[in-house]
Image 1: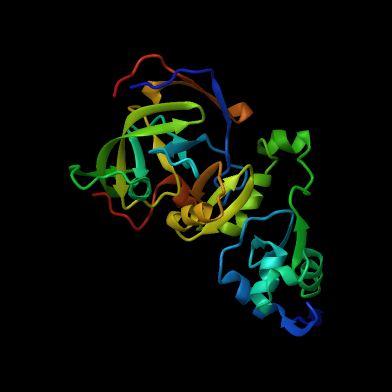
Image 2: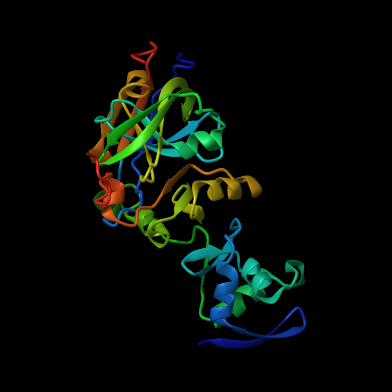
Length: 164
Length: 144
């Protein structure tokens, strides 16, 4: 298990990746501004993750510090909108976004998602949670739906249902 | 009632994240009862006679269903209880009032836009080769 000894806001911490992941995934990610880290298949603001893992006030450290610590712990860090656009060849073959849309949804199988463009703003177990998150963070989505886990969920036939 | 008749509206097909990742579908963002924050995914379904939505959509929009009679219907391979209400729907700039059958349980992750209440309010062009849907609101109220 990856473990990192570090100082944040002049305080010493020993953080391990599993504990950080457990702290972060207990809550929904807040809206992304620019930078993010991928924790448990979801994109979180780096400062939210470090605040959850350490109990520190977010005003006491920077996004740069948070990103650095989380990368050392093995989490993938990225920046919104930095993914390259699909080429015209892939767009023709796999639709308007060259397959990027399905790829963005892959971590959220079985969950309700609210999308803005192809970006997933929030994913949760129920549509009520998604709506509540959007209200709380004053966010507007383009569309909301549940990402199917199985093929039958998108085609309407559930083998467990008796229609007789 | 047709509240507005406007210019053609174009929407790209969307992935719903199916296990087959290259599948894109004619899905439209439908606002129900004036809730703008998160339009619901409505599948353009030429095989559906009516608009069918999950009952949780009605609850979120504050649409009262308690007095509506219950119909048990078989739909897309499952059985559900449906209650009808006349509600305001919006897609982009187009707004209209139409009957919707709110269903519980609703195992699908999207909703269905059908003949009465959707297709009778729009001229619908599906260009699957371009992954595009075009809607033009009809001037007449339609069948519903």
